[in-house]
Image 1 (cartoon, helix red, strand yellow):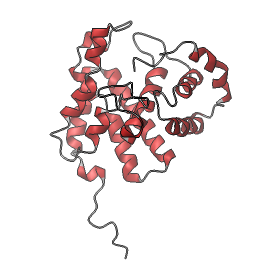
Image 2: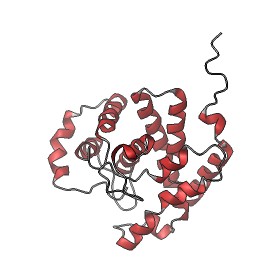
Image 3: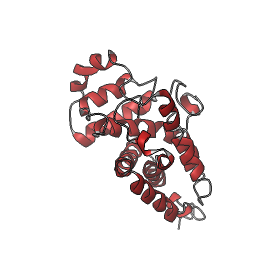
Image 4: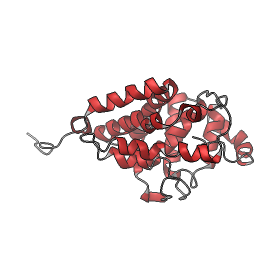
Length: 223
């Protein structure tokens, strides 16, 4: 009998899932859209983790961080969280606090040690121009780099109070145009392969609009 895995426990065994579920409920009560968005991101994270070839435990971790990544938004005032139209700089500065709020909320959750830095850094950019610390490249945790892509994809393709959803083609074009700046380029390719497999559309269609995206930078900056 192979005992190589004896003594090891999965992320699902380590993390206090009752606490995770409690936070998910609080997100739903605060803002149903953010709750729905988190469920979508969790599915995308698990799919991307599978595309990368991660273990079942890593896929579970990817799913959990997708569910919980925006929990800090429950501390953001509703008039900012759901404001129709562009945020002011002061409002955006408040919105940016949600990443650290969420990470800090999990400090007391048993077994969440691996999740906390992922949440804190999921708005960092590959080029170092993100927040909260402006770290770059592989200094950003892998799951945070994955989350940045999945988060943006769902935010762009879902209707919000301040804008209509964009098409899958336009969203893919935007992600491609941000490879190496906002996003990890290797993960962008893997994510696009995953989306192609999932939705079955030809990526050549995205190239028809990529120039339009390039000429209109910042499409995804709010997300």
